[in-house]
Image 1 (tube, rainbow, N blue to C red):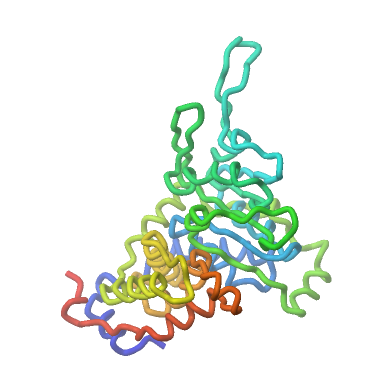
Image 2 (image 1 turned 90 degrees about the vertical axis):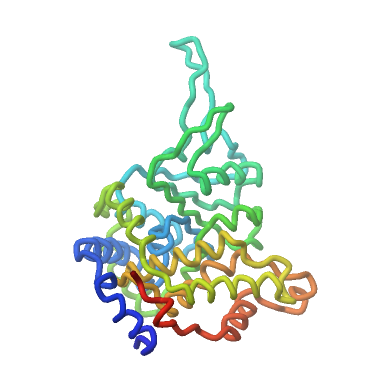
Length: 340
């Protein structure tokens, strides 16, 4: 139920808070429904993934092996259309294998630039933490600036550009922790988790008939997805909610248990994720519940515990939950929040 103060605020801007065109909602629901036929019983994770990508961000899927991380990423990539590339990260992968580089063309007798697999609309970086930091850093420019630089030349990536990365837990053998600068470039870090028993039984019973990600048909074209991303960024956010988000981000920077809090980029990503969540729900305005629903997947992976707090068993998730619980939910001011 929408709290009455926010309901009043929405009534004030009725002309601008009507639902989005039904066509966009139908397309998004169809896309998520097709992905849900591949990954059973994980509708919340699917919706969060779509919200992150709709917000113009990238998604890091971190979980134990065998729960469907790669399957989810492949399914999302298929229904979004556009060009799809998969990079299998291994210990011997080099930066040039990702961004591209000069190779010798025997026919031309000259060096020519060969594009790397990053030159695609949707890129699956599978097991990203199995490659050394040198190769991981090759993604930094692509994730933030949507461009790559090779041999002194900078090239823009296709639009839209979305990176879906999977990784096993950092304590796994043969893995390299992602640097903080790269973690901060992922809008959300999500965990799929084990399926409920009834869905696991259903998965086993219908294994021959259940579609594989490669069998899913694209629902949209890249230009349509770009339009949806632009629409999502126009979702109205009340100034009181902006102040609420900034305050919580600020408390993470001064929390006694944390040595690294949420960056300004994290605050921006949190607002965009809340806007995308509202857009997926067919609304032109953000509610406090949209911010609360996205705070953990957007902020938790950007927080770093102090050594003494980690030694005492502190958890970034619990620290964040405490900070959110201690911050009162704002109520709108009917005069300052009225749209013109």
